[in-house]
Amino acid sequence: AIADEGNEWGVPAGQPLGVQHPAAWVQIAAVSQDQTRNTMTLIPSILSKRAIEEYRIDLGKEIIYADKGRARIEAV
Image 1: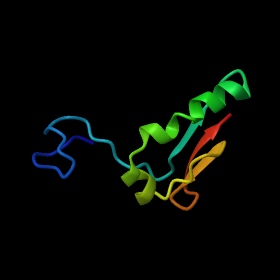
Image 2: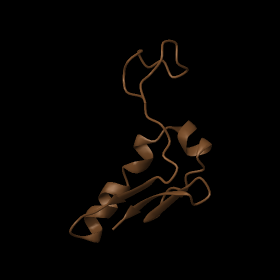
Image 3: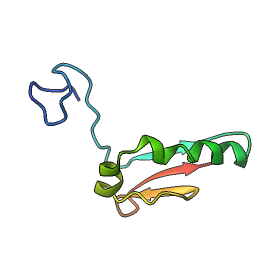
Protein backbone atom coordinates (compact mmCIF):
# COMPACT_ATOMS: atom_id res chain seq x y z
CA ALA A 1 0.00 0.00 0.00
CA ILE A 2 1.06 3.60 -0.49
CA ALA A 3 0.73 6.11 2.36
CA ASP A 4 -1.84 8.89 2.04
CA GLU A 5 -1.29 12.46 3.24
CA GLY A 6 -1.81 12.71 7.01
CA ASN A 7 -1.89 8.95 7.67
CA GLU A 8 -2.00 7.88 11.34
CA TRP A 9 1.54 6.43 11.30
CA GLY A 10 3.27 9.59 10.13
CA VAL A 11 4.65 7.94 6.98
CA PRO A 12 5.29 10.55 4.26
CA ALA A 13 2.65 10.56 1.51
CA GLY A 14 3.57 8.40 -1.47
CA GLN A 15 5.90 6.14 0.54
CA PRO A 16 5.35 2.38 0.93
CA LEU A 17 3.17 1.42 3.88
CA GLY A 18 3.06 -2.08 5.33
CA VAL A 19 -0.32 -3.77 5.62
CA GLN A 20 -1.32 -6.90 7.50
CA HIS A 21 -1.43 -10.02 5.37
CA PRO A 22 -4.40 -12.28 6.16
CA ALA A 23 -2.18 -15.38 6.29
CA ALA A 24 1.15 -14.05 7.60
CA TRP A 25 3.84 -16.72 7.91
CA VAL A 26 7.58 -16.10 8.17
CA GLN A 27 10.14 -18.91 8.10
CA ILE A 28 13.73 -18.43 9.25
CA ALA A 29 16.02 -21.06 7.76
CA ALA A 30 19.63 -21.91 8.58
CA VAL A 31 22.03 -24.83 8.39
CA SER A 32 21.80 -25.56 12.11
CA GLN A 33 19.35 -25.15 14.97
CA ASP A 34 21.92 -22.92 16.72
CA GLN A 35 21.83 -20.47 13.80
CA THR A 36 18.04 -20.26 13.81
CA ARG A 37 18.07 -19.84 17.60
CA ASN A 38 20.51 -16.92 17.25
CA THR A 39 18.23 -15.25 14.72
CA MET A 40 15.06 -15.92 16.70
CA THR A 41 16.55 -14.23 19.78
CA LEU A 42 16.59 -10.96 17.78
CA ILE A 43 12.86 -11.03 17.03
CA PRO A 44 11.73 -9.39 20.32
CA SER A 45 14.07 -6.44 19.74
CA ILE A 46 12.60 -5.64 16.31
CA LEU A 47 8.96 -5.73 17.44
CA SER A 48 7.40 -2.80 19.22
CA LYS A 49 5.55 -3.27 22.50
CA ARG A 50 2.43 -2.08 20.69
CA ALA A 51 2.80 -4.77 18.00
CA ILE A 52 3.36 -7.49 20.62
CA GLU A 53 0.21 -6.45 22.49
CA GLU A 54 -1.98 -5.66 19.47
CA TYR A 55 -1.26 -8.93 17.64
CA ARG A 56 -0.90 -11.03 20.82
CA ILE A 57 2.58 -12.23 19.83
CA ASP A 58 3.84 -15.12 21.97
CA LEU A 59 7.63 -14.66 22.10
CA GLY A 60 10.42 -16.99 23.26
CA LYS A 61 9.62 -20.11 21.25
CA GLU A 62 10.87 -21.81 18.08
CA ILE A 63 7.48 -21.11 16.55
CA ILE A 64 6.14 -17.68 17.50
CA TYR A 65 2.37 -17.49 17.14
CA ALA A 66 0.38 -14.30 16.82
CA ASP A 67 -3.21 -13.27 16.27
CA LYS A 68 -4.60 -16.43 17.96
CA GLY A 69 -2.49 -18.72 15.77
CA ARG A 70 -3.43 -17.15 12.44
CA ALA A 71 0.10 -15.75 12.00
CA ARG A 72 3.46 -17.25 12.89
CA ILE A 73 7.23 -16.91 12.69
CA GLU A 74 8.88 -20.31 12.49
CA ALA A 75 12.51 -21.44 12.83
CA VAL A 76 13.16 -24.26 10.35
